[in-house]
Amino acid sequence: MRVIMVMFDSLNRKFLSSYGCEQSVTPNFQRLSELTVTFDNFYGGSLPCIPARRELQTGRYNFLHRSWGPMEPFDDSLPQILSNHGIYTHLVTDHCHYWQEGGSTYHTRFSSCDFIRGQEGDFWYGDAAGFTRNLDLRRQDAINRLYMPEESDCPHARTFRSGLCFLEKNVENQNWFLQLEYFDPHEPYFAPQRFREMYGAREDGLDWPYYGKVSDRTRIEDARLHYMALVTMCDEYLGKILDFMDSNHMWNDTMLIVNTDHGFLLGEHSYFAKNYMPCYDEIVHIPFFIWDPRTGRRNARCSNLAQTIDIAPTILDYFGIKPTKDMQGLSLGEAAANGGPARDYALFGCFGKHVNITDGRYVYMRSAKRDVPLNNYTIVPLNILTPFSLEELQQSEITPPDAFGFSKGIPLLKIPTCDTTAPDNSIYSYSKHKSFGDLLFDLQTDPAQESPIDAPEVEQRLICKMREMMAENEAPSEQLERMGL
Image (cartoon, rainbow, N blue to C red; front, side):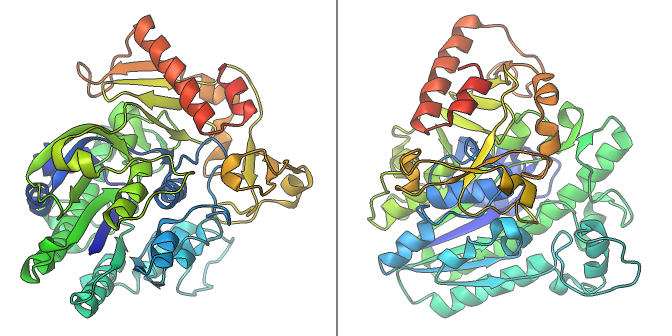
């Protein structure tokens, strides 16, 4: 038994032919849909990138207790659990956040890993000319691109080659898990010329959208062309993995999962990117494909509600391993096999923003009701690019050992939030967050989420379930107070 998980970053389902898009050239995603079960109601949980990866490993929600940060020593880790049961785990990735402060304890849970350098301003090649400050991602990205003159030099192509090398080496072996994880199509949209030419995307065009409001349709279209070019590159290299599975008859005994952490706004709701706005459908309603050789179900759609915290229990179940008691996710094996029962509700959000819930039809986004300061709960006080500041740590307290059941009796640091505790955390202030207000959408009648509805009975039902799920997640008291729950 083997599992291959091909993971992308910022893959918007609305740009894939398997989800109805006619603009993007994605024949291999369409082929993938014909070879697997495609989930139509799959959601992220904790956003953005690294919080989503903590959920992927632990099978539990992250966004109510801390922002961006490493795996904690008390966390249940999918690859670690597999390794403890004699299953080899290997990570191949060009996701540069893994070798920054805030993602530095994820890869160490694998039996082995291969890092591919060069994405999104990865501090890689050294060039002092014109230097003015540290952590200048755009300056570093321009330097890195000088060392990628050919498509074969691009991080995506090198990541694929490393993943293929593992597959060729281990195609005859059993009991392994490969996480082949691409940073693409995360911005910047650095796609080789042949993919840009398919869409008429200019080399000097907008391939790195800023985060925030946008109204210029020319800029929106420019960014979309570059995004589609990179999605098509992802599609082509995905096809090579499918080809390898075909030629080596791997469909008989190898589970395949293709997923992403979250989506991305490209002008929808008058925004670029994520983090700054409510978690609209384009951000959190994500693609998910699974092939389970035990059932052989393919070319099928599944309407069951599912999300990222369900991935770890699904993989553990495939290997005959029970999820830990702290995992909140559910195995998707039965849902993928016959549309059997899964979850009734999904909770999701970013630390310090709306708390959101969906039943698969209605999405309720609840904004803060009171200006209550939040805290990060951790024993690994690292942010995305730097440690927590001395000033933050000087204000920290120690929680009792039994404050949270999932910490397994370990006291945690309770660190008050400030503008440095998460990506774009300055926009999580009470006044800016509250300005969006509560939002309730009916995806059946309004899939683009353009017209919030007034449905008190639906809203009250979702509020009650939200409160219940937050309690099950051991949400800190200040989160409940902040949300008026």
